[in-house]
Length: 170
Image 1 (cartoon, rainbow, N blue to C red):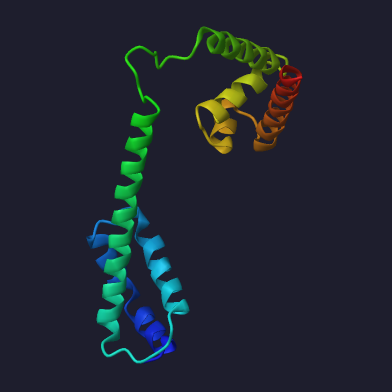
Image 2 (cartoon, rainbow, N blue to C red):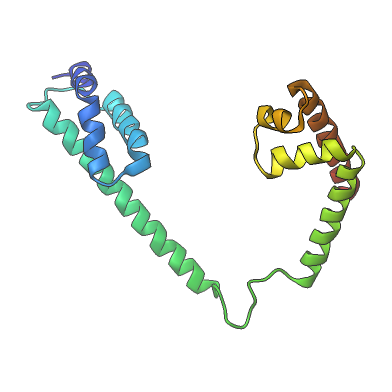
């Protein structure tokens, strides 16, 4: 069977192959692995294959084995790096330095001042949308304004924040 025949078998059994990959523990990566299987089929040398469906299942299983080995190697590498560089230490705090805390407070104060410069409603709309994650339509309904008003207030707030960042960086 040539690669185009293998592609036809793949396409006919795509859902079953996807279920198989998920059953091996791929979870969210199952679609990515199925795509990788497709790419490998595309680049595989053509030639007769006695049992194409079994061949595809074996390829999928091998992809999962490769993924597992790579994850295990990455874990070993990360562990070795942590040990080599000292990793989390009892004599060193995980908390930011006092200097970093002061800088962060200055940046926050500058951002707050920039936000207050655009007006109370625009500042509240910015916070509801960007910080609380509320959609613009919901913010418009909550504040009793149109969607274009929310968009305009957000543009003002974004502009003020960008200007504040530029001033801070220079």
